[in-house]
Structure formats: structure tokens, C-alpha cells
Amino acid sequence: MEEPNLTPRQRKWFDSVRAGLERDTGKNLAQWAAIARTCPETGHRARLKWFKDTHGLMQNRASWVLGEAFGSGSAWSDPAALTDALWTDPASRAIYEALDGRARALPDVIRSARKGYTAWSRNVQFAAARPVKGGRARLGLAVPTTADPSLEARGRESWSERLTSSLTLNSPAVVGGNLDALLRSAWEQA
Image 1 (cartoon, rainbow, N blue to C red):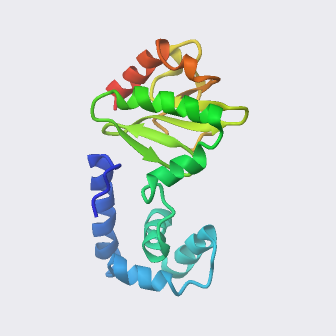
Image 2: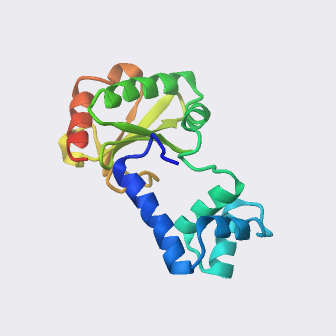
């Protein structure tokens, strides 16, 4: 199944995971999914540990197999539902919508929903945002912190390591102007 919210590079990665799984283990995805259904654990992390300890499958492959076996809770399964679940605060949602409009106005941009953030990619991820308490949003960008005085180091964010700088946005009104230039700069490097 071809996912519309994956970049060509991401599709290629998933194809390589599929091919490597069968090549390296001698079992295809359907066979591994059947094995996953025998797992005595119920939590995702516990199932990942079970796969590693029992079958030697590491996190990426095990997560993929578990998604196939139990229905995907992954970033790719239902982007609209993930977006709605993440951006529940109206003020944060307004910031997200402003960011999304600006990012998707750039050519060839794909938006991907994750449980903890929303990402924008061209060939690779160039921006991501997550809601912050108090009706704000945290934006990560693939630009150096020296690109603008408002930028700071990414901190412990879970988005792509390419996003080396970040800033907190307090309202949708700050989306535009200088932020547009930063988004474009990050997009150009993707």
C-alpha cells in the first residue's frame, strides 16, 4: 500500500526494511505478524522488548511488525486522527494551522502526523511542531541557531536530529515574516 503522506525517500526506506526483513530473517512480514500475535505482552514497549529478547528483532522492524499484527498506531496510519488528537487546544491548533499553511505553500511538501508532533518534509524533514501548554507551539527547524536571534538549540525534542534549532510560538500572528524566511531556508536544505 502506498502512503500519500510519505516522501519518496521514506517510501524507499520502508521498502528496504521490508526487503531486509525477509532477507535477514527468512520470514516475510505476514509470517512475523503471525508470530507477533503470539506475544504474551500487551503494551507496545513490552512487545518490543519481547521481540528483541525472543526473536532478535530490533525496534524499527519490531514496530513495523507490531503495526501489521495489531493495527498500526504509527504515524502513518490515520494522519487526521493523530492531528486532531495532538492539536486539541484551540490556541495551539490555530498556531499549527498557520504553520501548516505556510509550510505546505512551499513546493513538494509532505506533512506527516506523529503522536507527539507534526512534521513537514520535502526529501527529508525540515520542520516539526508540537503543542505546548498554555496555547503555544514548539517549532523545530533544520537551520542553525545562528540563523536568527530567536532560535535556540533543539533540546531534547523527539523529532529528526536534522532539526537543530527551535523556538516557541505564542500565537498564530507570529507565523509569517521572518518565520517564513526560516521555513524557506529549512525547506531549501531538505
